[in-house]
Image 1: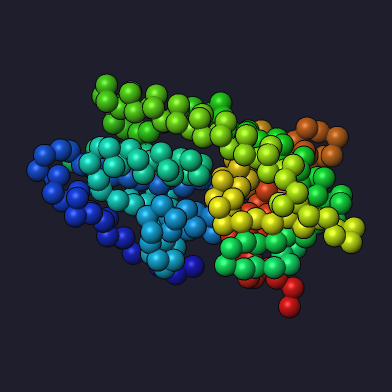
Image 2: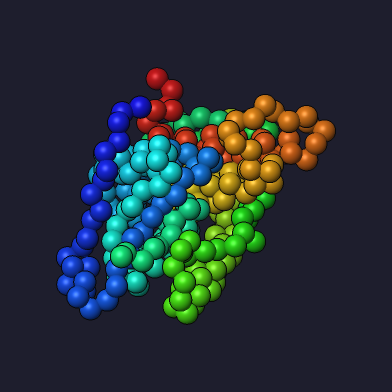
Length: 98
Length: 158
């Protein structure tokens, strides 16, 4: 498999505007031995609107390092993404960004 | 089971009558992960997170019931299941694709859990006299159909 570089965690314009007002949360996808790699890639594309190459990069990072930091967002937006990811049965959580 | 047609609007899968019956049986096992605990954060602790955990559990439970209702109607639909020359054609529209993938993934993960979460994922086929063998087949059938739906163009006959 190709080497995986640390993906850049995206901060949307809305998130940047709210940075001064509210704490941010990292949306993290954790590895599990059962989800299909193509399925995980599909879910990332579907939820975040990412191109396939970017979705695959994050999928491989989950697979090879145990987790991938997907986005950094204020509480409610991070919560929304975790709901969507868990609706697809991915192991996703939101963790406070220090 | 194979892909027979891919259009911008749908994917058509072909089944023998026996495969169709077995696939319906697999689908009717849904949901298998409903009772698993839902956790929005591994490390964050606050009243806000506690509320978010409850909201997540409610949201996923509602989605599961909604999917179950859709699935039951879908399995009976004559526009979804078409009979042709001793074969069944299953038409998966783009609208149906996402919830069907979610259902299949629930069955795959739930079956894996029922088997005791083996890691690596591909254990030898369990003895057919044990309950695990049923979930072994459910898990693999769900994965096979997921792969057909995710990459239909790679699974069309040439």
